[in-house]
Image 1 (tube, rainbow, N blue to C red):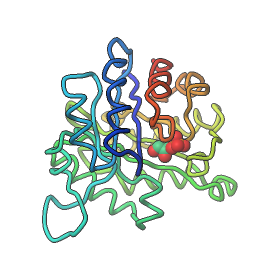
Image 2 (cartoon, rainbow, N blue to C red):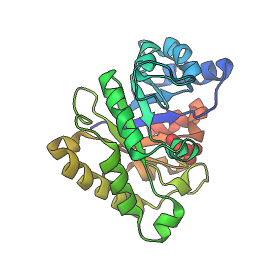
Image 3 (cartoon, protein in one colour):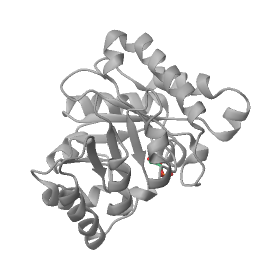
Image 4 (cartoon, rainbow, N blue to C red):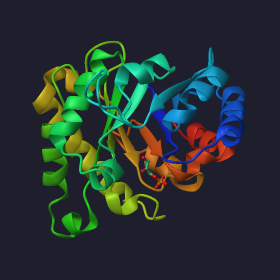
Length: 248
Ligand code: 13P
């Protein structure tokens, strides 16, 4: 399975910056041995999708509502993301779980909406530092997977993806050790197989949390690491492409 290198721009990127990142990505993506995805803020999806049309770089959203339309001021549905040029959507990122109180059940409803709209979901899971210190990391991540994934998650030509992002590694410059990543990804794979049966083997498991050009090769070589979900370093096209070149 090709690795997926996905960029989560979070709440960053005005028109000029989006073009400055997407243009070089379009030129740099040819011949890479991995899949590339960028997830700009919703306001930039149309612009970025237009720049990247026909290229090897896919576009995704960072969240969607569980319903397709209706009286939900300020929200954006999966169908709308699809309509603006997205084929992917990040769901259940820890920043949404903490900033917006999203539960596993909310994430699951969004996964179903994404699948119904033809979007491939990237479901984020990960423990806090206190949970890791307490020895509960695997239990927390297993519970998030059981609560967030739906039947059909791994179906179709674009199966869903899981991103393991330890909360304490996000934006901190700290990463999990390669041994901890290997152990957690093996646990996630076993959980996916228990939840989804043989289809669980089709799910790529990304690592996220302070992935940079200088640590990408080591992290991407860990068994069961199916790619990376990159925050800060995805805002610089050269850094993002350097991470992609480290992929298998
Ligand atoms: P950083 O790469 O900035 O740590 O962010 C990781 C992340 O949250 C990606 O979704």
